Image (cartoon, rainbow, N blue to C red; front, side):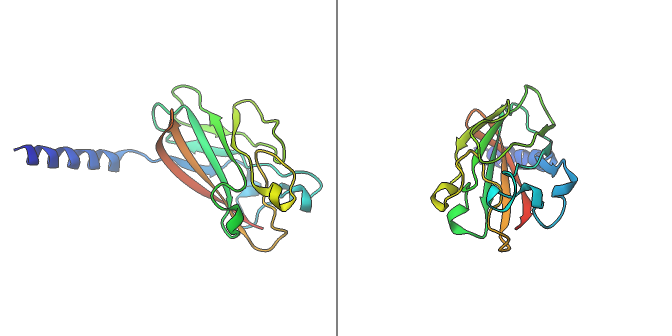
Length: 168
């Protein structure tokens, strides 16, 4: 009987998770909706200014989410994978099921309200300007850039998704 109850509980939980909407992310700015990283948003080594993160629309944010963790990476260059371009958190207002995360300037530790640096970018060892976030900075070598987006409650991951920022 206990085994049947356990199986029924697991089946019910599985069906509930199939019906639950998953966290989804889209770019809020049209300039990011292309294959290539926007030229205006690359690092200062290849631009007149430091590039910024895209504004990101989030839908289906799980209940009890108190922050979003954004992990920026260069998927092509091993030294900058897994958050090499910075990891930041963004505070989520109570009971938010959707929101737009605003853009954030790169190559600085002065962050907009709501943002906190979790792990600074690792570009300093490649002679890049220090900061919480480093915009794509390969010099146009065809590297692929991404962001992993995690909905968090305290330090527990509630849901996650990702976006490809583009190629540079």
